[in-house]
Length: 250
Image 1 (tube, rainbow, N blue to C red):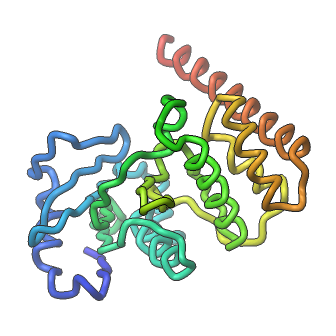
Image 2: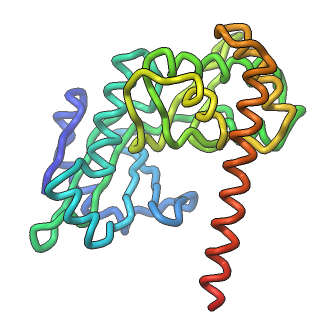
């Protein structure tokens, strides 16, 4: 077993270890996840979120053992890196890796449980949400700030940003952190990073308008690029889903 803890939780190593060892026995009626499973529980009255990553296939077990960091380790390290850059994410607590026959098998990432007011997903389904326009524009500025800090969040999708109201402003927290790159980003990469977020042209228009206010590019250039990248992504997604369903049928 390999593990690393947040210094603030160094006195809780034993109970945290027991939680991941007994993960299957944790009862959480709101447990979620198809590929990866997420459960919430309590430790000393504090909420924890435990993510159990799907057991990797043989090739990835070899890769994660010898050539690259596991998803759990990357999640933990990226969370700490984000916080140092002033980007919010639920506080990282620990990660664990278990090996079978010398190869990585089960891995876990633990963070503090965050009670949010909404996620970005709600903005894609409820256009009458209170203060909707301000939230969407604040989210756009948040994404711009990621890019200004040389952060490319590869899983920038509707469910991976938690939103908390903070008086008259909004705080944005990233989750599902294992796929990130840290480097200078081109204009294309910045705008393409919005492509997973919505299928609605009205939202693209609002985000493009806000981006035009805080970047050197004009509205039409941003909107055209963002909408084109969104359509490409959606077309590819539908094509993959069609092929997958066809393959399952045969």
